Length: 363
Image (cartoon, rainbow, N blue to C red; front, side):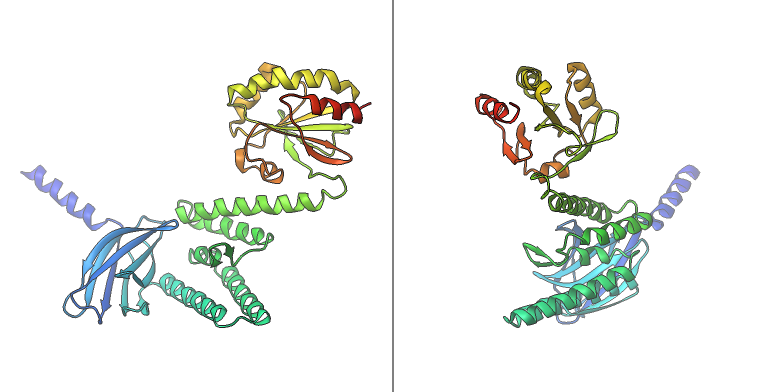
């Protein structure tokens, strides 16, 4: 019996210590109505609970929040979002809302910041919808963009900057739409990773930051491609040292994208690429082979096992590699013939057209 009492006491203590955040909400216009409590699950909402208000429109609920991992939680009345909250472990917030989406919140400074930024975004959208004058639209957009930058720079350690950075003018146009915004994204991401290393919201921001950094890198390479007639690449080889296309010094370069995890691609190396190499390398052809398999160890083993004599590179980013985006590679294998005259797609299957082109260039 004593052991049972001790176990019961331990369970009570454990229950008391669970990382719950409490929400007390009053929707005076909706007595006896259902309020949906939803968790932001990246770009969708996950319903946590549905709570009925009492005769005065009051309701309360508890939400699990892990230590150091705040959650975005939203209250809905029917299809209308009536409150937005950013809750930490142990938060106790009080919300007064109406059925139109207006609300106030106490007990959570982060939730108040979130409310203010949502209001600023709503005003921006309303202002954009109120005019068709291009000059006025530009003025409104620039003012909101600058206001967002100012907020983000002043709140580097707050998760409220995440929805700000992901704001959309419409479904196709982000508010942060400049390539150089990648620099701001990286600065914010690195700051938030120090504060909330486990947050899935920060992980989503990291993924978006990497995407933007790749786009910025692509733009830089495209801008620098004018002198060569094709975009340059600078990727790590087997020894980890970077090898650039522009530094090969060959009369012609066959740029080849492949996947070392695909058996047919491995056969293609020996059946098609190797004969081309043996026939034309001594006359000025180089092959620059880019593997899109993110498993660099497996790639290195295959290159060594096949004893591939040409330049082999892999940055470990797979299809997210900037090289894939830069050359608009949608499927592999894919090949391009690069010369001083520019770039052209290379058909390696029949090889007749390629042979004629190499004869012309490397005569």
